[in-house]
Image 1 (tube, helix red, strand yellow):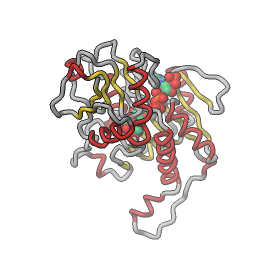
Image 2 (tube, helix red, strand yellow):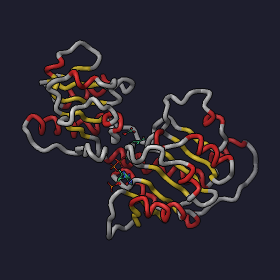
Image 3 (cartoon, protein in one colour):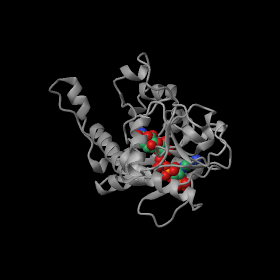
Image 4 (cartoon, protein in one colour):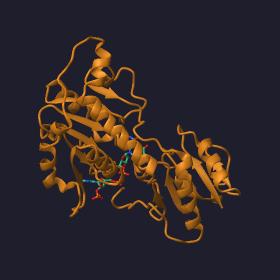
Length: 306
Ligand code: NDP
Ligand code: OXD
């Protein structure tokens, strides 16, 4: 019985080393090295080559290296009986919360703007009481961000699939209530998973429902965003700008108009980066649960796609 680490572009050797250190005796293959496919029952995965898993007849579990699983669920060749798990990790939540808080403060206080202008030109800034933050996606990360913002004095609301009561943070749900969230959000943070229902959700129709001057932060997936609509809404003056950490095509091509746009801030998918040392224990636990036929943790609902 073996574990396969398959993560082109996400340093598979670091993961393999952590797995071996934390579970001595575990047989770990690192893709694309030569290995016996029949041996593999458990895969630790990030952006695997499409269709590859159908060649593993005894595969039972695919563990995402990150919180998101769209890189797995979007592959139509993964048999239904295979369980998909994801990562839930305090470091991921804390890092995401710090990142979003930092971006909002930077915008409110014009920090990057002053720095890049190299001019002594004091600008009017926003106070915390002037700002309302709307968060699309109130799961593990959205809720963590919301709590951090609330602790720092921000008024925060969220949007999720399911209705919830007695939350400290107002949560809207479903298409019918989205407009209520949007109309009061001077900052909009996207932390939805990528599914057929959420793809292209950040589009002109949505942006128009935000108040004039709203600022958009996309830290979820590039495919959530209609790039053309974003540019149009910033250039028309309806949106004041955007911070984007995720893109349809990565690395973002040099000639992409986002790079040169003065009102778009770009980061290379670093909002919250999985720390292998911190998440390998939960992956090993799931491997052991699999071998002992016990329930797995952090299982993705294949039907829902997250
Ligand atoms: P969760 O699965 O915990 O939460 C997803 C949230 O989205 C839930 O609140 C869910 O609602 C809501 N949701 C899903 N579909 C819909 C829909 N159609 N309409 C309304 N609400 C919906 O995910 P995480 O918080 O762990 O992660 C969110 C995403 O963040 C990941 O999928 C990934 O893409 C991205 N990410 C980005 C990183 C980065 O560095 N940029 C790092 C890590 C993750 P409900 O609660 O009702 O089910
Ligand atoms: C993740 C990510 O999903 O890095 O964890 O985006």
